[in-house]
Amino acid sequence: MSISLVGMSYAISIESFVAAIDQQTEKKGGKEKQMLFLESLHTLLISPSFTNSPYHQIFAELARYSYEKIQTLKTSTTSKIPTTEVIKTSDGTNYIHINNVDVQKVKDAVLGWHNTERSNMKVSLYSYHSDLEKSATTRAKVLRTEARTNNTHRRKSGDGYYNYASIMQWFNDL
Figure 1 (tube, rainbow, N blue to C red):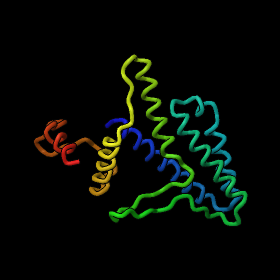
Figure 2: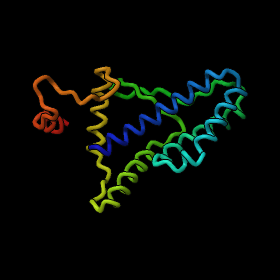
Figure 3: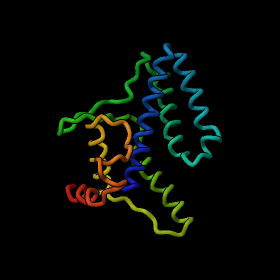
Figure 4: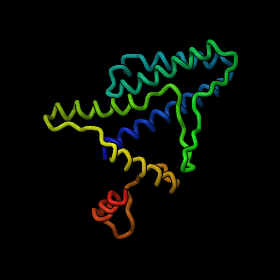
């Protein structure tokens, strides 16, 4: 389950970064100031301190996003660029789709990082498991429903740090 949760947290991190980029770009006002901001950000994201980071693939996605946003600004006649869209699912919930971010690439990168480290330690590698992703997605929906912005790992009163019967029930219910 940790791979799905980690992959999901990285996807959420990218969504947060993209939203912050969009918000800061809009605050800059005119098209020229927006382009200067995005060009500075892009230059930073492709600098050696970012490209040599363990998170270089995430920074590469953000650099690609900022570059595409610059190109869009150069060719557009307005400074307001839709980069996200809200999609309503059949169960009535909404999620935000961020254009130009390949979430599967992010998931693959995270799994690759884990497996590189596991390989270095000479332990078995992880693989993708759709049931674990389903569990992580379900947990995220529960947290969203409870309006929690983080997972504190606090359990019900009286439970230890982990109540394994409760955890097994969770998986059985799924």
